[in-house]
Amino acid sequence: MNLNSNEVQGIHPYSGTDTVMVGNGNSLSITGIGHTTLPTTTLQLHNVLVVLDIKGKLLSVSQFTRDNNCYFFFYPWGFLLKDMKTNQVILKGPMANGLYPINLQQLSKPSLSFLANKVPGSLWHACLGHPHSHILSRLCLPSLNKMTAFCESCMLGKSSKLPFHSRQTYANSFLHTLHTDV
Image 1: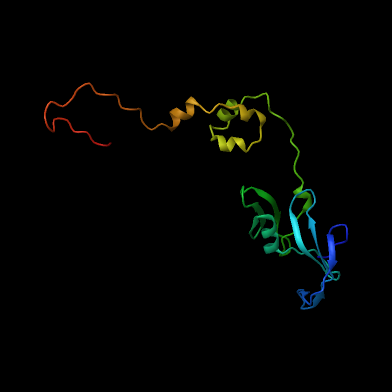
Image 2: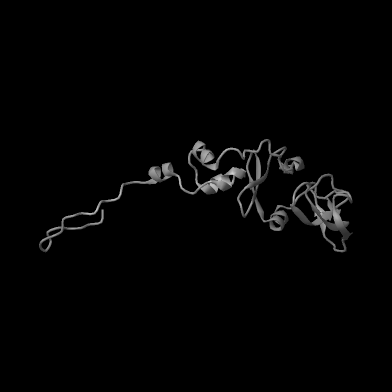
């Protein structure tokens, strides 16, 4: 990567014989190895190769996904970077000129525009179409922590049949009454 000393920490000289081959077939010398963190994130880049003659910053997808426990989806229109534990999208971007550039400004976390702690969680649950509590917990609204687990509408809506009532009559002889699983 063509990085300055402010972007890569812990640079030590490279003593191997490997080179970086670029598109025109030229081999470029590796002058050092270091590590860095992408701005405003905890995404780490280990074993960053410092190549002074290269024109752009290149990313090893396999190294990046191993270091950060994430995975990429590449599409003709762009890419998605997802966390392996939560499956949440960390980053997305377009495809431009056959490459998938990473916009580091997208990595900054958005600020909340409002705080809805005056609205009870049961009202959010009803207004959003009675979703499961795991879905509501992803909204990060403080009032949802106080929501009760019982919702009469959910119970009635998810019930398929009312329970059978107990019978007062009993069989008087063998095979008089048959009981089957309906």
